[in-house]
Length: 390
Image (cartoon, rainbow, N blue to C red; front, top):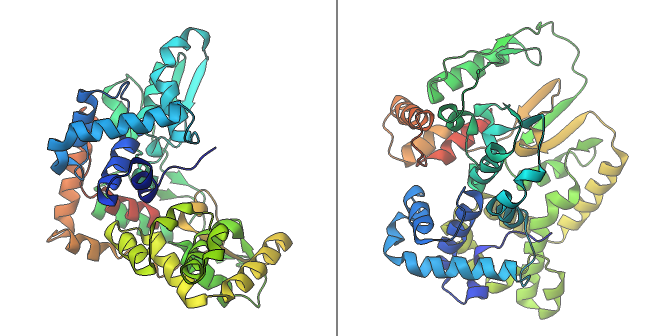
């Protein structure tokens, strides 16, 4: 299974400017993640209108459409490795051919807060009684095109809504803090009620949760003399910084080219150009990985070896993980690390004068979704950061 194409790869494949390539990448991903059934003028128009990042290129819609068609044809002709997004899109576009052969008693859509239009369209077309499960406050993948189906589908199907507000996983102390954030930032009216007694139990394990793999690597160094448990594979954690290390070496000596598995990096002629790219497109993970590669240099391989040994040994009471990987897990004590975004600072950046102003805008967006008005919330990334922190 192939990986999704990066902006620099699209730029090279289609022989277009890298900034135009990023718009093409965004449009292509929106097409694959949407419920569109063809690459038509209407489809491109709808995509450009629904994504605020694309509205300013509406006059170039025919050019963008041509590039999307070319990319799709390359996948269909097997000249590009098939990706999850593309084969799922292909199935959704052709589901009517197979629908008579597919029937279930029940169809359950789990993690509905992080589904997307293409999955939702397939879900609605499948035959059988429908069940949707999810938590709107755990939506953390909107950057991949996910939507909050729990809100969107309310006006599309006749269903009973049941709320699960009681928890046995954490005490009132945590519940009260969660309720404060959800109420003041997201206008949540339902409160979490804790049924777990805060009996000062003995702490048998502790987990450090980071925003990025880069901070995770720094923690691995900090706890190098301790037994630790890693929730993710060290190869996944170190993958990007090590590729950047080899990219830096490649700039000095061409023989390191074959060590780079992230081939899209080869489109950049200097480390500064890669940094500019990361800053321009606000790729927080890439920015952090570059810093790690520069700071640790060859030492990164010592840390990787140590991490792999600890990962295989799988002992210790100190857990290290990222927020995305921690979902659904629990520990006796959790420490949130310093690399999460500062939400008030993000609100200032987007010119909000008060939290109430942001809350009002988001509430209006949710009401529109529930009433069937599909629109992209301009500052959804802030909601994602709040949810990630939660």
